[in-house]
Image (cartoon, rainbow, N blue to C red; front, side):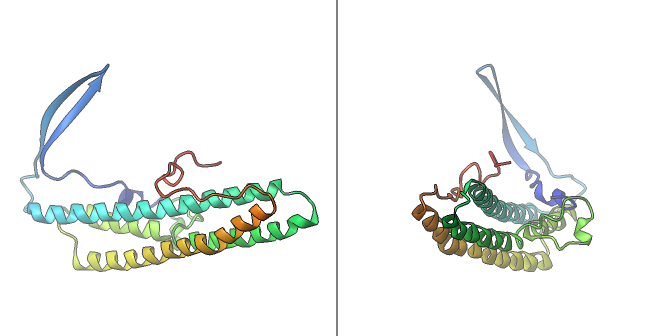
Length: 212
């Protein structure tokens, strides 16, 4: 995330009472802290809660996208590793061809979610942002424009992006059931250790312990 990373950083705490806990050398101290609204603002608690809820929902959608992308990239890395380990025999040509085909489909499913061509500021002027960038931009609009409830336009954009996200993740789910499952079966029939799709709640899907 480059230009729109501010929209992916999450929401500030709402006004209210909170507990602060500090643990050092096995000893825990707890204190109460209160967050107060700037008295110069005329925003209601209800409006702030609406803003907070939308930002939390945006974070949830970003997490779904990145979990799916991390799964895709892990499967792609495993597939490339499998190809490099294939013997030069003619019997491996079918597996090699299927691996190339599946890699192309993995990239095709990933592209609507994240545009990896965007790797520096202002790249989005040349390349269309993926769903992650579009969600983060909405997060910036909702969270940084004002301390106020989301506008009707923000709600409409939220619904549009949620539909697109559901469609993109559904395509990935379908690819797992079809192409990935068929490739796993082919690899197993050739005595090749099959690839594995990380579980959605695994450390790999969460972006940890990624292959390099």
